[in-house]
Image 1: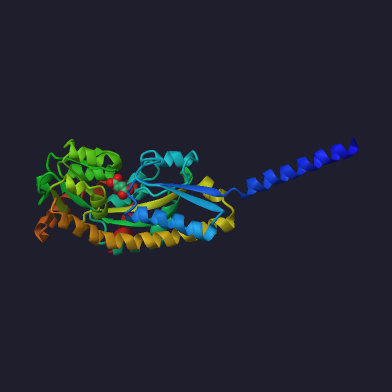
Image 2: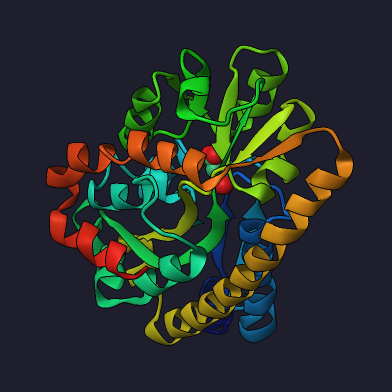
Length: 329
Ligand code: SIN
């Protein structure tokens, strides 16, 4: 009898150990949700991150990438992150306004003259400080991914601001962008990225603003006969996670995950630089959309009409921050 009990106890102990060791060995899963196609700077950076983590942390951490709004659109992803349903996302900097007003900075029209200036500011002390601007809301910024400068596509040729008067433009969820189109006498409509193509195709809206790579990968150029090369604003991304998830990872693993992310961001930024030129050329080659190049006088008119938006948001964003960003030019 005694022997039988000992045997049962031994078997129970072994199976408990097995269950415990299986639980310890279970990998950490990072779901990375984004809204763009895989052949974009952000899509490529996300896939690179997945691959680097598999290579360097195989078995300990698994990254699952969900492109094209398959898991969450940008409107829902941050709430889902705080609920623990997704661990990583990289919404455009225009989509954080419910969580922080500071990032509205990046939507100010004609703030950066080129991507080098945007990079310089993002890597500066002030730019890095912005990564922590949502800490009180439980969100941590881990880095910036570039896309590029924005162009305006429309159903009619836009040479001067007056040409946009009365037209309906889709914008991201940003009050700064709304003010920018209102300054043109146009009608801004905040709509999810996933709906833009259909809205353009069905002519429910007249135009939108986006980068060359998004205009190409989302096929906006197939349903928009004109694109004005305005370079008036920026679409870059903030890679974001929840503080609860990030700080809950063992430190050694977190360090390795961050290194993989930094390397993936550097890779994505190279893709951004290359795609900015190549996707523009692909659009030209398609002959589906005419690209309008502004004369210096026409461009000056766009600057003059849009620039007052800075004053409108100066108090919310902070004059010092605006000055620091502008100085990077
Ligand atoms: C993105 O590039 O992630 C989306 C930008 C947009 O909503 O226009």
